[in-house]
Image (cartoon, rainbow, N blue to C red; front, side, top):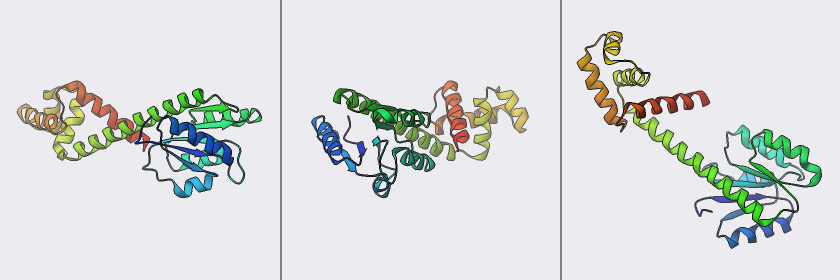
Length: 207
């Protein structure tokens, strides 16, 4: 559990909200309580980190409706659904849309805490990757146009002499640019450059 993350509880049953709040307080986990999906959306800031514990069957806006709206905004907030016996088909649909899990009522507190901890770990991992990608983007923006050309070719496995011929420059000039690329990207090995190129391609494909 983390003080930097919040467990958002959305359930129209006040007793459930209060019970979950007390449960999370026993492990020192901050939480926010909402009686409906729209109330949550009105207050939610995408910069907030954590996970969402969401009742699947609510008036006005169901849990599935809220999940859909979050997906439309590009949110990666992990979702754990709370479901009744008759809601299993809906819960399966929620899983297909990317929900982490669904917990059937009545649930064991230990089981829910385990799932919440798993969700917070996923959120932390996603946050760390986002920071790494932002750092990589900043480093890449510091490269000159020629250095970026050398980076792309080096990371693709081309030899210096091939790069030199391709760009119409000397091998020595390629070596100089390559050294600058390694310095600016804080890379010590070719393998690190390759990983950076792969990460960059993943980011571009996701856009």
